[in-house]
Length: 83
Image (cartoon, rainbow, N blue to C red; front, side):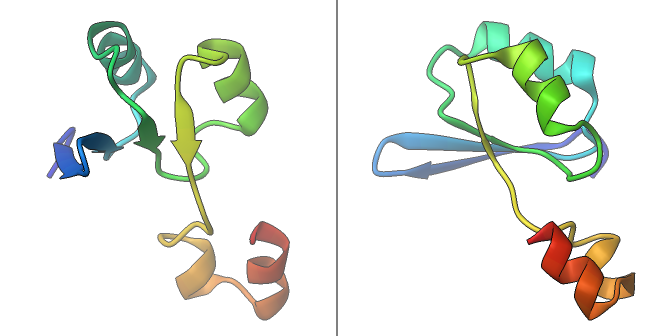
């Protein structure tokens, strides 16, 4: 689902999962959804430093190991370094 946005409501908290990682797409939603708590990006799209500069304290980012590249194709050492 290209550019699909999935809303998951749990205990009145919202978790938005964005696919495709388009920065302009994210910025529009950050400005519109002041109630957004967490944004889960595809890893590798932007660095932590870029995210911090762009969003500051507006959004909490949920992340983990790159499930599209590192887990299926990486070595044990690759996975350990990304965890």
